Image 1 (tube, one colour):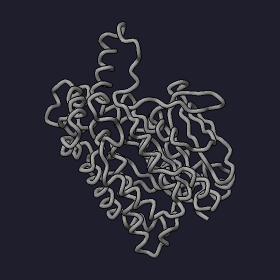
Image 2 (image 1 turned 135 degrees about the vertical axis):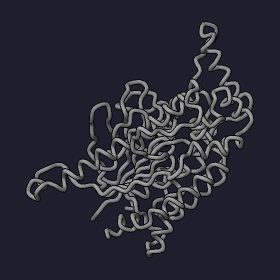
Image 3 (image 1 turned 90 degrees about the horizontal axis):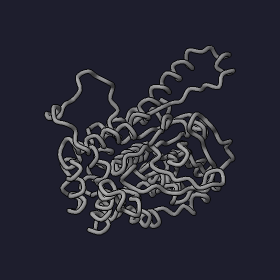
Length: 386
């Protein structure tokens, strides 16, 4: 039997796109007679905001279509106040603390932990995801594994925490490892802690505490956890365009202006959230090509195996869409982002990760549905093997 894995990548508010794609896929499968409650993804892996979507799906994998509908409702009605504090003290106060520490570090007694206070996100996750159901779904066979990836600021290790139905031997690679555990809300907060924007979270690792941030940092092999957990057919949903390199780079019309802080930060975010996935897709494609060239007897003696891969990523630039909706953010947040240069076209890449407002997330849901339909034939071949 083929085991299908789902990989949901990071991207802050951009993760709404993933839910739109999943809803589109659900409708495609439903039209072909797929049972409404049957989970098509026994292995679910998530990173950063994708970890939140992954946990929500895995914890309700006994009612997969219902899980997608509930997740869609959350993203359809999102507001920034559900993720980070938008009041003056919680938003401007944090920013002032950060700037004060940079300018007058010798006078500031406490170190700033992040640009934003994401305590509302912990409350949202507590209401949104009942992780007690996860063990039940594993025991009942609706799910084989859930994996959440985070990055340790303490040791520099890239760690995949996983919870499985059957025991899986932990894997260890260069600067990345895995740890079987009971997945908790703290793992989701750690994995989705966008660097500088949200605070790091303490997690247990080998009997000690380490501080973890966004799982997309230093993620050199994002497809790897699903393979280690037994998937031999994998759907990857990205949160940004995956484009081939070209010497004819797209310019904004302001290419001769010195980049703003937001422009540099947006470039760094793109590196964190997109580059590792693009490289791993190329690597897996080369491995598949090599495996298919091997004779049967050599293939049987090799540890290599062919992995059926389907990648769906946004067909439009999400920073461009963010420019159209940044005015929906609360006034205090716009002030902070304006200071960084993140409210104009050049700096919109940074805003696109923090724009947790329904006007933007609804547009991403629609785009995800549209892109899923555009991949209808590939989706059917992927699941039906045609």
